Each structure stands twice: as C-alpha cells, then as structure tokens.
Length: 79
Image 1 (cartoon, rainbow, N blue to C red):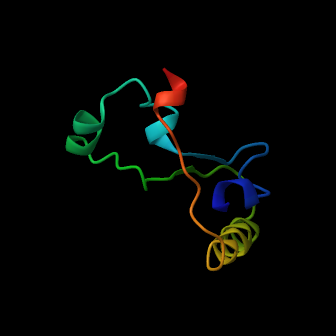
Image 2: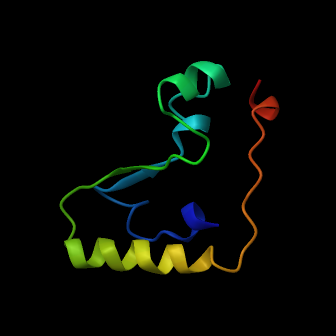
Image 3: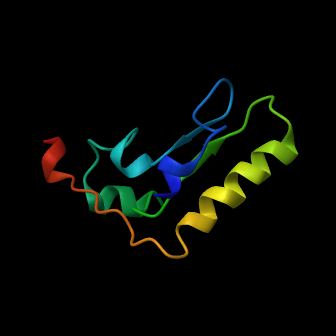
C-alpha cells in the first residue's frame, strides 16, 4: 500500500524500491538478512524534486499504511 501510494517517487528523478523483491530478489533470504536487506527495507533514491514535495509524498503514503493491512510478497511467485 505504501509503495503504491507514492506519487512523486515513481516519477522523474526520485525512485523507490523494495530491495528484497527487486534488486536482490535472486539472493537467498539468509544472505539478504546478513547484508541487512530485510523484507521491510525500502530504498529511496532522491533526485532533484523539491524536498518539501518529496516529504509530503512520503507523509501521505505513510498515512495509508496506518489502517491498511501489509501487502504479502511471495518470493515463490518470482521463481
């Protein structure tokens, strides 16, 4: 819900990713954990957008997870 709720981070210069299922999807869970790449890790790559706009985007996306159940990610589906 959080990642899907972001508006600015999915555009232009700033990006957001869930590393466990994106950049490190091929790394087994124990190795990811040893590297500090947990299933809850979200990586933000901040670009040139206005910082207040980005903080506002994060705030509105975080507000969606206060009442929404967490998404279920299945690594088995990616194999």
